[in-house]
Length: 402
Image (cartoon, rainbow, N blue to C red):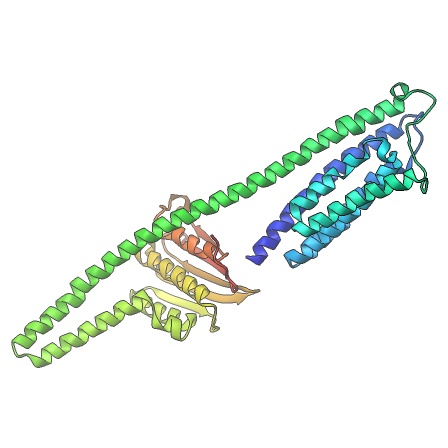
């Protein structure tokens, strides 16, 4: 769960980096256009969008290097604080309170309070408000000079440089960038909502399938008890009534063994007592009795109970599909640990099928949902005449996903 949250947060922040680059690219282009007018003198404020744009590259590198959500938020907060400082300088160069400087903090404050934890967002907001207030009061008391780049001999609405900058920066630039940014936020919300909806629907489907599976399992157990155990016990009773003690004892032994087989099928004792490897070897030994050759590579380590249970059930279901449908001569089973994941594979040389034609029953879709509930993944590869391969991986520190 933590790794998934980290990856998701990194992906969202990287998307905001793209938004910043587009935003800053627009302002850099505007700066180049304005500087092309001979009547407009160079001003250091035009270096700010270029510096800001360059700053996104080491920021993106640092974002990709983080291994925890907390450190990711710390890096993000530091970058947003640096943005606030750059904006403060920009505000000062644009005339402090004399123009629209207070609006330039808008994007940084939006990002900070949207992506960062609550108090980190408050800190960045405080830096932005404090920076603007600092510039305003320092200029008011004459500690730093008041800079207004558009002042000239002509009135402002007659000054081409002022009009051009106001239209491009305050109008076209500001509002087009604002629209793009808001659209990016809306897209992020939409993706998040769609993912939540997908998980809710998957959980609803799984719940329905579990109920159906439970009823089918009850019918199967009832039928097996009635047809096998019940008949054996009835025959033992008749044998006792007829005085056939030896035959009755033999029948009772068969009944006990049938009950043990049923218990092992419902929940293999070896899975709890000895772990996944012994339970799988028992399962594969029984499976080989069907006449299909089995080749296995199974790690001997113990794993968390949920991981072992899901891995066993997925392999059990995959083998059952091979037995029923594959018409295979050989099956390969592999289970191994790799970089914090339990990797599993069931492959056969059977007739194969088109995966798109698999029905949404209790087979492959159910296997996939078992795995995904633990934060893992399952893939199916098959072609007619070329066998089938089921590959799954499970995190060794699972947290059930709802």
